[in-house]
Image 1 (tube, one colour):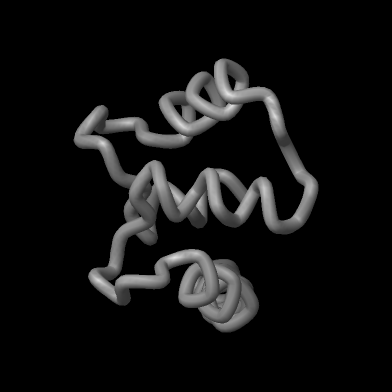
Image 2: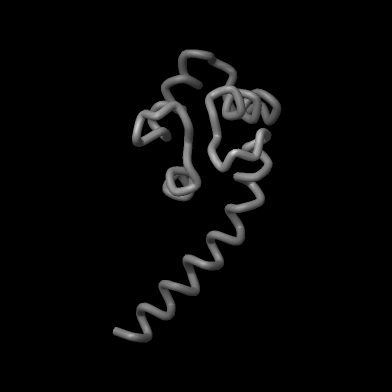
Length: 79
């Protein structure tokens, strides 16, 4: 059991290190959350999505607690 916890911790730490730069790039106001405008800007700049209705749908599906932002925790769950 101890080995599994250790491996899980290592994987989680590695994953967090890789995700952090992406989150910081999208979170342009540096408040620790990605708001809808930041999400849309990222998607449009990178030609990921360009349909406004679909962008809103995707954002809402990522915003699990429906507070209008994507937290670091929610962002990690996406990836």
